[in-house]
Image (cartoon, rainbow, N blue to C red; front, side, top):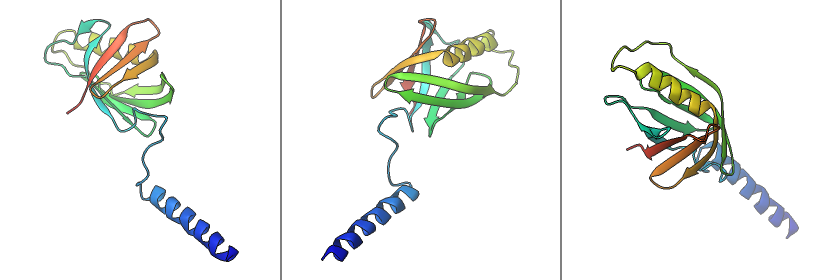
Length: 141
């Protein structure tokens, strides 16, 4: 009888490990951002320059997106409602139009580097930077 119980436990562990390897086990419960994508609506209280779009996607500890002209990426960590971004990089294209797009991009990326905390619900993500400025996003379609 004891051998059957041990065999059942071993089988259950093998099944769970197999599901994890196949990706059928979801992301850790501690990271509500994993697998989500967002579009910036305001930053520091200002709207975006017309004709520009800034995106942000989270996946398995990595962040990526478009900053209006360039693409960017890096790492992120979540601890409760705290968030830190690190190793951020971006491509080095120069965009002349619309006017101000490069300044907007640099300000956005600086706020993202200084991220401290976040709030998320079904349709909105708010990221607070060290300067107390807020990045507001809506869920990407």
